[in-house]
Length: 109
Image (tube, rainbow, N blue to C red; front, side, top):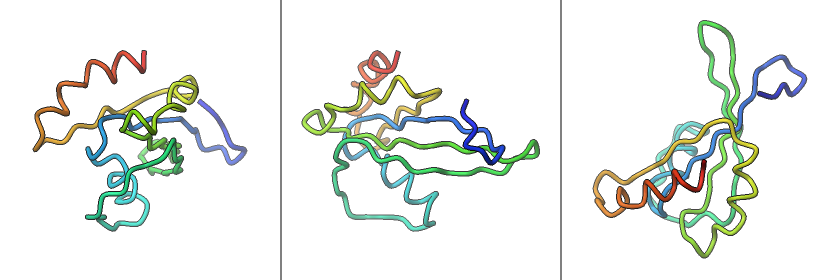
C-alpha cells in the first residue's frame, strides 16, 4: 500500500488478459463513463488512477492497463512487481480467451 501524501490508501492493480478482452474499455468506462466500441491495441502499460469511495473512506487504485498481445507486452513483467492485486480479464463471447487464464496467472505469481 502506498500513500501519495493525501491520506488515501493507494494500491497498484493490474488488468491482464488476451488482446480484445475489454481491459481498456473497463478503465475508460470508470474514468469517463463512456463505452468505447472501437478496438485499439494498448502499447506497453497505461496507468490510470481510480478513486472509489467506501463506507470506510476513499481508496485509490492505480489501474495498470496492460497490452494483451505478446508483441506489445515486453514491459509487463517489470511492472508486475509493483502490484498488490490483479484482475484477469476474459471475453465471455470467446472461449479461447479462457484457455490462457492459467498463463496469465502464472505470469503474475
